[in-house]
Length: 541
Image 1 (tube, rainbow, N blue to C red):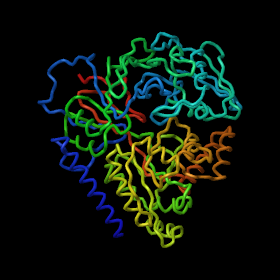
Image 2 (cartoon, one colour):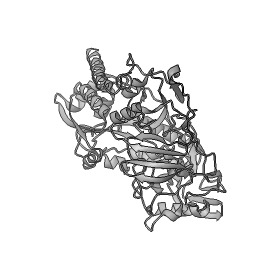
Image 3 (cartoon, one colour):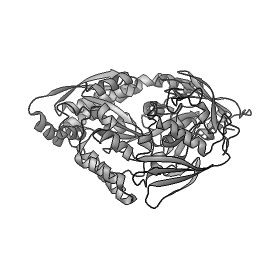
Image 4 (tube, rainbow, N blue to C red):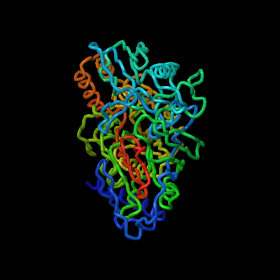
């Protein structure tokens, strides 16, 4: 109990120090350090004072400037060219707020009785930004591009095998119908195809290797008119859009990597909102409480945060040590004291935004953790390197907290901030002990996560040196892949989640919440599972 009290005090002290440093960014910060009351899918806005009431007419076509911490349009060599949150390209299948598949460029579909064929009926009267028609030929061209091989991306790999496992053929049935045939039943294929799983582009923009020859042409409500890497991307309303037009005529999204600089730009009016992952750290978001000029909005996120342990080396090649690490974590301290409640503790490897998610109790028990660690270490201690992304200031405070908890079970951490790409190189080489990582869902099909982290040959299992191997996992994945009945597949997925909370291929910490902030000069700025619904953003009248 004394140790728990000490570490909680340490967490509060670290948070207080961080907040003191951030206070210089805002002169009207809150008098309390608690987060504003924000419910899921609900925006908290303090009513404007009389002096803030607009007396002039707002030009609805004036440019709206937003900020993001990374390039949302990395360009020609990125598999997707730009993020889904820009609403430039559209998928065949998208999802609702419960991550259930719903129509996008495919209007309707049906599965064969044996589950091996899916037939998609395409939306008619749709144009790409370059004037080309969207039809079955365009879909086939996009599948031909995916068939050329995996393409790297700043978002998720463009990988036909990941999004269409066991795909045998894809064919045009008629001008607005395509058919996919699989070697095994694929009853949950729609979940694989959500968003990044079925992105569509004008075939005119591909070269022979499937790379973009210039700015990508999608079918979305916005088109890109200018893209300066590391500076900004300029969006313009696409007047020939098949659906509801975007409310804003032009939106400029600036690249502002530093969180403090982004916050200052928001406060000064240089930008009117922040979007994307890590749009605003919770410690800065609470600075806006009580300020009538700003609002925050939050909902579930597809992102989960976790620790990877080098399972190819002692001591983390022993499941008891991985269990001990999880039991030693004080997730409530992290989520409440460091992240102000803008996240949810978990030990499940699967993110809570997918309909397949199963909730498990979060077990934390320091005494049990010490016993398990002693079984592995005996009376010795072990020193390990703890890697984290040095560009995220909050992760330093988090690492110090976690390191203090790990000392209690015989692990001494050498905390090492690194550039993210360099961190991943060390992890691939197995030259580390612990690393702080994150993972989002590219679609709603959980097998993608299980395959990457838990299957012996999984890319993250290999590239992060997890060293995880389980015959039961491999058997469950094979059984799920062959199952025609969705309930049978769900049973496999539930067991895989249970295993992940017992054997810890990684040590989950918490599920994110999507948290964004904006000026009350804007309207329609609501957090979604992935970003915001950009076409609804407009000037407030």
